[in-house]
Image 1 (tube, rainbow, N blue to C red):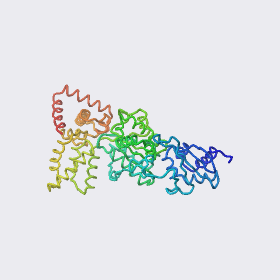
Image 2: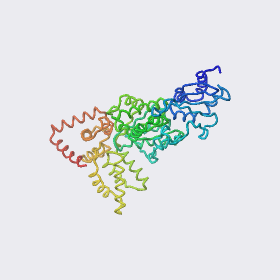
Image 3: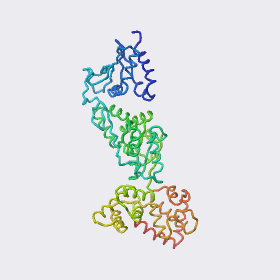
Length: 476
């Protein structure tokens, strides 16, 4: 035969390139090396057994057609697979793939398909050694967009998540990093994105994994000498959702392998969704190259839900549980429990349980009794909403008036006091405090804080107001 193996393979590649997506061609065909051409059999070398199985599973028909076109109807293909270094033989194992449909019974004796072989692809979520990798998404169907209540605290993150779910890998939000404190809905939103993608794109491989589980799987892969299979498994994902990515901090080897998986998926236009308890700039112990990649897409924060959102969350939860709650009970719970959604839902469950066990109606008195006990056992943060409620009650004015843009002296002073306490007792930024107090900017909040401090030092009556209010706010 006049043609050499490289020429034949180049001709095959030119045909294949026109029949597969560009990224798939780069991933699965560019790494292949033509080794020899003898008696109408073209031998190509592939990086791993997983690589070989993937080609056979997804591209065998295309390969057969192109080989026959170049070599003739007798044309066949043979693989050389580069095995792990742990194998006794350093010489690549040759595996013949017949041009008829490749089934287990047609495989040559040189490579029996033992599903328990250590060199078979490992799927960390099912059983090591399965030839056909079927991935369960690990998603929780109860965490969906329908029961994720939208508010000012999460609007950006929810909108970005929904955009990603409608066009995974096709938006500017890749990666989408959702960050915020405990119990604010990061995991819920991450699952909701995955579930929505599965509904819209059933053929896409979606996987949710916590960073701790990812790290443990990597340790197991290192112990089992199957790191390549671990990496290849994660590189197969169309959508990878990693929860609590901050727990990779300090784990250099795990970060390194995640870096390569991240790069591969991002370059392949696959979607990455990450959650964290803090923004990238605040993550300690994380490699800079990873942090820079986290900033490639969108980092959207989830903040403490405002009063209206908390009421809506309670309403939705009560509705799903088949419970009808009086408005005054809903408002009391929403005012009293403000740190996060998890505590809010926990308080509601406790209230329902109290009413059920004691055969009592759910009313404001029962809610107050339950909240007193609940608060004693729960570390709570004072919220901006609660401060505004205490201040407005103290000065006997509607909370809506306190939040309005009116410049009446008594309202301005009450508003400034609310800003002062919000700065002292919450972790909210000046901009966030201003937004809660009638849409003021951070400079207005800073001015209010200084004004209140000055009045405390110079005005005896004002100092008495503050001392009295201080007791009421801290009493919460």
